Amino acid sequence: MTTFWLAIALLIVIALLIVWRIFATPKNTIGAENEDIRQETNVTLYHEHLTQLDNDLAEGSIEQESYIQLKAELDKTLLQDAQSTQNTEVKVQKRSLLWTLGIAVSIVGFSLYSYMILGAYPQLSAPVAMTESDAHSDLSPEQMLAFRLQQLQNEVKANPANAQALFSLGQAYISAGEYSRAVTTFDRVMKQVGEHAEILGPKAQAMYYLNNQQISPDIQAVIDKSLALDSLDASTNILLGMDSFSNGKYKLAVQYWEKVLNSDRPGISTQALAGAVEEAKNQLRISNNESPTTEQVAEVDATLPRLVVNVSLADNVQKALSTSEDKTVFVYAIASNGPRMPLAAVKIKASDLPMTIVLDDTQAMTPQMRLSSVDKVHVYVVVSMQGSVGIKPGDFTAQALDISAMQKSPITMEISEQVAK
Image 1 (tube, rainbow, N blue to C red):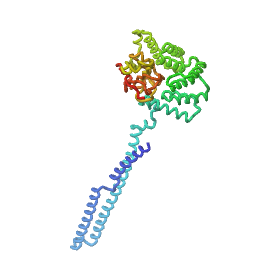
Image 2 (tube, one colour; image 1 turned 90 degrees about the horizontal axis):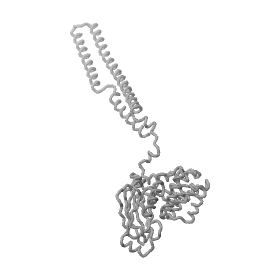
Image 3 (cartoon, one colour; image 1 turned 45 degrees about the horizontal axis):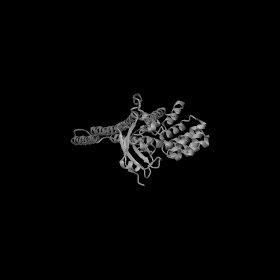
């Protein structure tokens, strides 16, 4: 802002210098020449008249007394002309000074008036307040998550005793896939406010992701403690529903998720959870060789992502798996640019292939990280030789990169490559 006003002042000074250059001189060149000619003419006429008087006196045409009187009048006339010229010069100088001052004041006054009234000064002096969402509306979901994470970290650093900020930071760590930090953060919260189900539930979720989506005895202990405090805790029941769904226990998953929906607890994404329940029921019908009704198919929201993946095994993979026990197959999608946390995932058996899998928002691990939150995804199919999440040496894989999250046509994926050991 200081630079702006300095620039305005410089422009005004330049304009004033131009005006002063034109009007500040006592008289212009043409006027000066005219005055010089006039003075020279008066002097010449004076000498001519004086010479004529001298001649007349010498010839006796006039007397000495008349000569003296006429010469005095002639001198007086010359003196009056000189004084008149000086007065004219003074008037010109005064008029030039007045013009200069008047125009200078007019320039400055008009410039300030124009800017203050007609220009942008009112907007600069009273800027429109911007909301945080306006300021960051052009950021991608991944950038927004990183910004929110940094914001919470700074808030906790400034006030470590702020339990609410600590809790929000723990949830942000889960969304960013930093599960170890999330567990540590939730422990810090409980040291301040004690053990509560609404804190134990998210901690159990972070521990579950950190343990490759397997419920260990330590995780089960946290789950049991949470349910003992509140049997309807949303985070804990959603976690149990996800684990049941991943292990093909669709009926149990429906029970856990419907318990949360029927609890009417605030802060729950009922639309996403209802979609998860519907998907579990669809999988249950598929496992029972039942087809969904026309009404159930029509209920699917066409504006939400729904990736159809046709998964099959190549001949070499079928041969390699024929001599071993049935293997677990993971089908999942992650953001093309962002955390490695799955946006949607399905767990099946190799013996189920070939099979058509549907990936959508109902399989999201958290409400913040869903297919509908990104534009492009990578889709992976992994035959896990060890039965755990992730791509490890010896696993058989297939991948489809940079797929539009809103793609409607089926994605055909044949598992044919083995990860080098």
